[in-house]
Length: 613
Image (cartoon, rainbow, N blue to C red; front, side, top):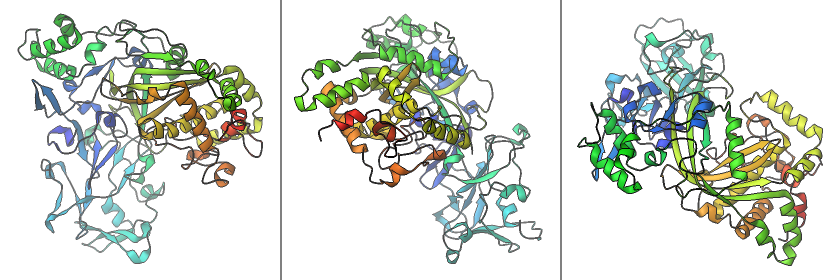
């Protein structure tokens, strides 16, 4: 639930999901709500006592933190009643420069101008005219954010020294539809400048505007010397904010395996309420009149001793981890996903392998050749009936997705990061290693070199190395997500991919999840029945064989972000940005079917030749 600066003037009607506070509206991000615009404050402004603690040692080791905290929520449920805590995530109004759509006057809005829950109004036009935020702001490569100095811009082409600038934001329709048609004018001295060229990299530097070295909610005492040049962007520009979210799956196969004896308690619905009142108590005890009823409620739900529930309030993770990077996370997950084992009923991870060969014995005769080709290329299909994933915000970048990472606490060492845990279900598909190795040997070197060269030129170091194996897996994941969204009842934006790729791994996990501890409804796992999945697989590949933008799409050598896609566009392959961890880049349908010019063989070429449609 967003609030204004430091949470003192709350805006209860403006709400966000907890997962959105991690991304895309985490610390430093712009959040547009109707006609208003806000920026999320850093995590040092959060009320930590109101945040539920999350643990996942594998991820904690990678990110070098002690634990994670969920965003605080404004409304808790206690004794059957909704309790307003006023502990919302702090946001503040930004940009602070606003204008009146009626009279076009501009005004620099301050914190003292805020009225709880009310939108800014024009003091000239009356209460009926709401002020709108300027759509431009200034950012630097070091993550800093500030308002554009509009008085300086308006007077930058004038020699007049104005002591009391009064600005208006004008539109000149006769100038066309570009930035040239917009201008900022000072009515005091009649100085004026249009916005043409304002988004150029050196535009602010040329008129003497420097980075303030801080964020809008920070005081001048917190400012640092910043030599990065400011650049004007629009609020909705994709390069204004790049969140870095690191995820890990809880791969314990029983409730005592490797992490914390209390996690099943902390996953209950009433745990945030219990933890909040515990943190606020001066001398908490199990007999506390507020804590005791909640402890008894949780204990009854789980058939646990109330003492164990109370101990969970201060319990610490049981093990440490030696994992070094995200690749280690994927490797460990691959080992469990590709070899699912019998697990406890209440384990956070439950999966079983789908018996493709059993179905293969009943395949109609006319389908036999296609089925045989399918089994040569696909190794295993695993039904992930329950999974727990922790998504942690490691930081954010501006302008350049490979630039300087700013932590959610603005580099203050807090020992924790903001995160959410989600529960859901998924399908895991692995490809046959022998068939894949043979296919890779047939991929021409010029195909590899073209992607590698483009990867280096684009400066997209945060993306995986664009090997033929990764491009194949990534493209296949997108095609399946697009088809599953028609079959399983979930929208494409509700499905997420996870790619397992190196010399010893070749698999994809497609999952859906929610913050509800009960997880999803089983619709995705149901599609993993061999006969259903085979039908979905066939349809996905058949539909993607021809794109409505062909032959342009299939013959395009460099498209998408950084030119990192070939035969892949919105009509055939791309999925919602929330579903793709790799910015919809490194995709090529030719790895599935083969290219017409022979530059790339199709891994599923034999399968497609034998399809009966």
